Structures are given as C-alpha cells and as structure tokens.
Length: 154
Image 1 (cartoon, rainbow, N blue to C red):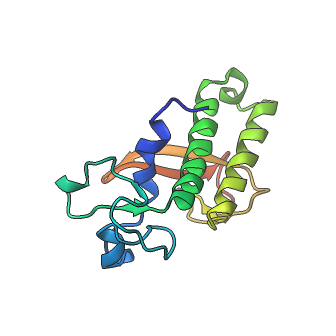
Image 2: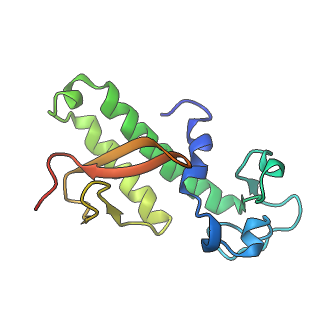
Image 3: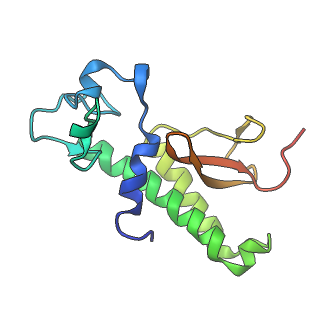
C-alpha cells in the first residue's frame, strides 16, 4: 500500500482542468467527476485547502473521491512495486505484479475510465496487452501515464 498522503497528493494529476470543467466544477459547487451538486461544507476538497491560492477550488462528492483515490492508490502501489521488486526490475514479472495490475484495472473500470493509451506510441492498450504505469514530472506537475512493457508494437 502506498505511503499515507501519496495518493491524495497525486489525485490532482487526474483532474481535468481548463475548459473541460464547468464553471460550477471549477468553483467547487459540483463534483469533478459526476453531476452531484455540493453545498458549502459538502464533498471533499481535492486541493486540501490550498484552492484559495488558485483560480479554482475543485471538490468531489465522497463516493467519487473514494473511487478516484482508489484508482490513484492502485496506480502508485503498482508503480512502486515495479521500481522496488528485484524480479520486476529484471523484466521477469513476479506473481505480485499481476495482482496489483488487476486491482488497478478494476479501479479504473469503477471510475469509468477503462481505456489507457501508451505515452510513447499513443495507441490504446487492452487489459490483456503488456503495459505498465509510468509516473513522470510534466509541465503541470506529476503525470500518471502508461507505456508498453516492451517495445511498442508497430
């Protein structure tokens, strides 16, 4: 399981920004991921109270927050395992990696985001294709992406 707070801090990486959000979503009056209206004090502050420094105050209903947090947490767990497991680092996947991968795929399905695409070749990858998470620093912060486990197919 990822360290406390890691998934929460990365949750902003999966939040749509700019014109993809309605004014109500940007102001925190509607959940980022569903049409649930949020009254003051309802929902979860995605910025952890730091939204006042920005021009948006993203909030989510508790159900969407929990489901999206689970998606990010399973991503982080899978990514951390790949970086720390001797077998996986040698490109000889261990039995744990399959369990972590499956947990992440199921978490993505739960938030209605089953498709992933390779950051290198931009092809959509099926659950039975060989792919893995790839966490990297982008211009807007940490980016949660994916890539093929080996060379991209032609």
